[in-house]
Image (cartoon, rainbow, N blue to C red):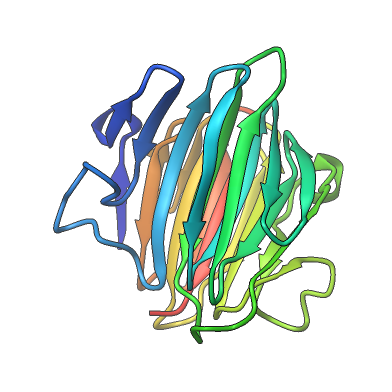
Length: 233
């Protein structure tokens, strides 16, 4: 089962400095049929104007992954962590028992991010934050784990949940397969380009909610950059 969710049908909000599209119910956008997908709770497509951003605010008991599509985002939190994450790179904040953070676009140009929230396996753990670069060449023609709750994914940022966030880049005409275990949930979004997944076309920033597909065969119609979440129920 693959349910395509076209970008122009997503809920959203325009705050001036922030233009947001929501793949799932979030803030003032409420859709009882889109409260999450397995443990995946939020997938926001945010466009942030220069010299603006999210002021300090708290979170608890959520794994928050930020995938930077364009520009850069600068993180600060009350644990003393500070870092700048550039396009193609990833940061993970495990909110745990509670953390207060800000995320600003201090760049001269627009920043675009995917913000992904996944429910953790356990609550009340100490909060943490980390970021790392993922050169796009390393994931050319294949999926690479960017953040993961699986110990075997030693190069990925750690998650406290039974899930992986993966990235891939494909040239037009290239195909990549991904095996999805039974009972797992997958959600795929092309950051750029267009692909066909098991016969279903996805254009840039469309979403695909996937279940009961043992193998995902993804062929690039155009050069494409992909982000995939594979999670338990």
